[in-house]
Image (cartoon, rainbow, N blue to C red; front, side, top):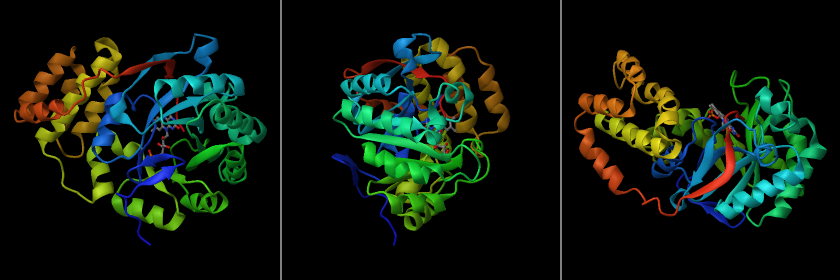
Length: 353
Ligand SMILES: Cc1cc2nc3c(=O)[nH]c(=O)nc-3n(C[C@H](O)[C@H](O)[C@H](O)COP(=O)(O)O)c2cc1C
């Protein structure tokens, strides 16, 4: 049976207007990315991981502090850590800041995170994983969700044993990225496992991994029974992929549209991270936006070498003058920023899942 991607579904009392969720990605999912995702059809967006370690040590390496606003909602904020009480405290802060969902990361395969007992390590430590979810669920009124991988080792099926226990501990939804932590991003996501998980729990499951097109999204929804698909890498520099998945609109964007979206992204990110930090942060996005045959390859090299974001903008407008007007339209639609809330928890520079 085909699922209508533009139909709403619920995580407890939170209504999510489409079946597409924008993935949390460390070093990518800044506010501009999440807002753009909403505009192009994501029904739910998720922040990067914020670190609970920062609560007690104050020495977490950080990208800055999380800024959230009401136009992003429904919004999930992702936290990670391995101490139930510290996680509960962080969850309360996340709820106070206005998040609709608190998402717990049990998928991060990065050593710096797993060696602290957090992230994917918890997939093999069910007692602690359940204690974390139970403490967080008790601490907040908003639904608590968990994002996990299949297990640590290749071929692991730990997620099937753990998933139902996490639901019993209070998880209101599970996202599965069915790769092992060892695999990182190699091989393929094995959504046969997603189907098994769906059959074992009575909460909505979100399928993450290798969703790159509408036919793929529809096939995964139909064969797994998942409530929604999550899209990560396919949306990097390419919000048009979201539109294609949700609405079947496969028109390629014009150069003017690409430049207008990229310049808006640059401006919003500079506002969020500050000009200096944004300058380095944004470099990977130039390649993502300008590739796919949209602009000749040397153009990206040219942009990466420019010293200021002003110069980058000027060079982009020179390549697509019609983008100035397109950008004005986009900016006119932007919220004022008056209701932005800064969450006093650092964004982790690690992350992954
Ligand atoms: C650069 C990058 C950073 C990521 N950071 C996170 C993270 O902070 N938390 C998380 O749960 N998953 C993280 N992930 C995993 C994604 O959310 C997603 O599950 C994974 O990329 C598979 O989906 P995809 O094939 O659509 O990219 C990250 C993935 C990438 C590529």
